[in-house]
Length: 394
Image 1: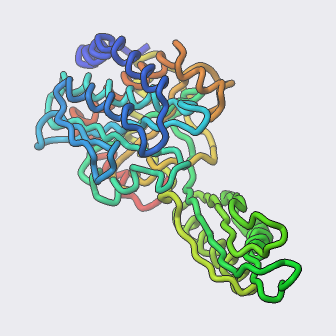
Image 2: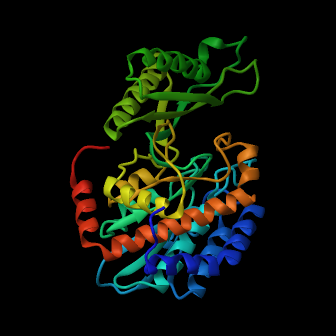
């Protein structure tokens, strides 16, 4: 095993010193799961922890009540940001590990801040990563507001069954499409009605017919969620909720256009009016910054943690949007074994286990050491920025 430098040994010692507090906070967040934009207790626990450890904390960031920005160090010099997630899933609670890895980001930041040779360390509390609430994706308005633009590195980590450096994530959008018709008695005066449900059903068939003309990376999936309540009344309203995914943002945009046009034409064909909206912020694919990822891998080697280099997947996260604004990485850390699959009861159980705590500490240590590398190594900052400035999505 490669040998730890004295400076990195100090970082690991700091995380050991706060390990009990980290476990307690992660457990408290697990025990009181909160959905996106409602994570008042979870966000406060992390922000209070950072504030108690010398960070300057701005809460209610961008008018998002559970978002925050914490900073320690000097405005001059290199800047490293860690991102903390803390929302839960409906019915499953913390079956994605945000209780652990939000805490890992904060623990890494505290350790680094106590031995910061220059520059500054930042933590952004990022609400609503899970795409199950209205306007989900707290990192998207942060990215759009330019909060990450001057960061030398943005580092996040996520729970998984296995430790994986790089998952090939894809872009994602959630759409709501509304059809407005005209109610009438289905038997007595059907000629006076305009059936919104039929228009929506026709749209479902039309959208399905698009699938054979899409590239292999595109996913389209949806539901008819609202329509009439009486079989004697022609439905005057129907709503489709669809998810659209694609590898590249430009493919996502063109696919959205085709799906919406298909639905609009079906509405017009049956005389309905039509409208649509994004029900969550679109998530972009992840631009993995390879120099930063290699530095993270070297630190996993120092910790004796084995890992997989790359895995294909169809997951999506708003961390992708951040990666279009600054050099960014989003590795995955094992919390118990390859049998674990996210968004399941078994994964939730792992998120309050000793295996989960071990994964949290591994993530915190590797994140802190990688942040230290960025702060102290001008060549790493240059190569990661050069990689970021290349136009191709990895």
